[in-house]
Image 1 (cartoon, rainbow, N blue to C red):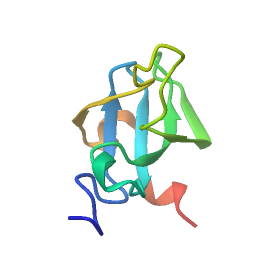
Image 2 (tube, rainbow, N blue to C red):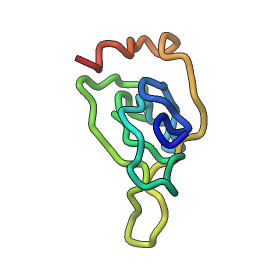
Image 3 (tube, one colour):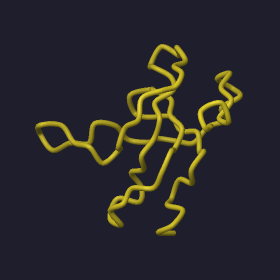
Amino acid sequence: MSTLGIYPVGTFVVLDSFELAIVHGVNSDPAMLNRPIALIVGDDLGNVRHPGDLVNFADTDETGAFRRTIIKTADPERYGIRVGDYFL
């Protein structure tokens, strides 16, 4: 679990902000395995971004609340996204 994390690299996820993301790496903090490093590849309107913006889901705002949270995994093909295009 500590090597793969809860969301393995390449997992396509939907966030509470309705953004779309692809898990890029496991968080180095063992207490944050459910908050990986990911590429934001789609905005809340469904616009696809390439190459995407790398974010850490453990980041918090000034109040201490997490900026983004994964709400579910999804099929990237439903959104017209090929996960392999984001990994070179």
